[in-house]
Length: 102
Image (tube, rainbow, N blue to C red; front, side):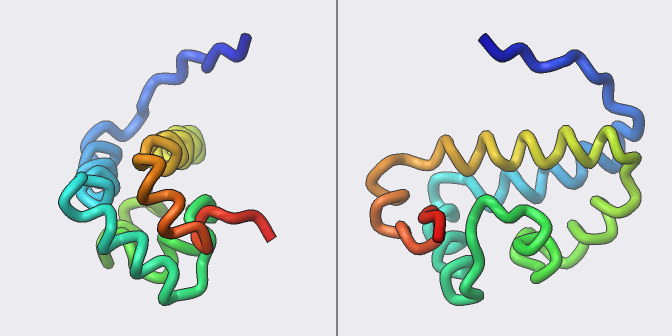
C-alpha cells in the first residue's frame, strides 16, 4: 500500500495562504462554479499547472505557488489532486469533460 512520505512544509505562511485559496474553490457551495469555469477554459481538472496559470484559483495563487520551494509545490499539487478526487460523484459525472482522460 502507498504511504506518503512525511515532508515538512518549509514556507508555512505562503503555503497556508495558497491552500486557503485552493480550499475555497472546492467548498461545496463553490465547487460547481469552479468546475464550470474549468470546462469553459477547456482544461482538464487534474492539470493543476494549467488551472493555476489561467487564474482559476485566484490571481494571487500564481505568485504564491511560484514563491514556494519545490517540496511545498509538490505538497500543494498532491493536496489539489486529493480535493479533485473528493468531489461528489454526481458532480464528477455532470462535469465529465473536465474529469475525462482524452
